[in-house]
Image (tube, rainbow, N blue to C red):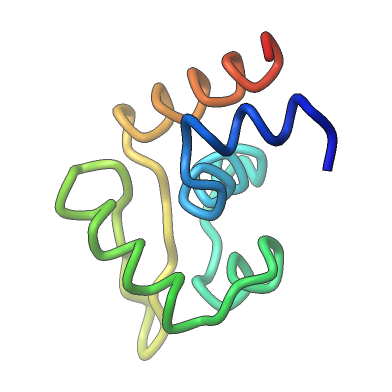
Amino acid sequence: MSEKEKIFNIFFREKPAMMLVGLKNTKGAMYASSLAKQIDCTYSHVVKILQEMEKASLINFEKQGRLKLLTLTKKGSDVADNIASIRNIL
């Protein structure tokens, strides 16, 4: 892990930050299971964090049959942009 990554992880919890930025980078909807694989995290942990993000109006769950698609809200997109900017500065 580089020094930049270490200092970034001091200020931000790595997995939630990676989740928001990952959703932003997909340019659309994504499944929680896909996001879990992308950030190397368990599905149950991802869902727990996503539920908190939904309460904070950062993401939306959109039901499609039995499946739930994840999308960023405008607020979530703005937060993801700021996280990415801070990461680039560090």
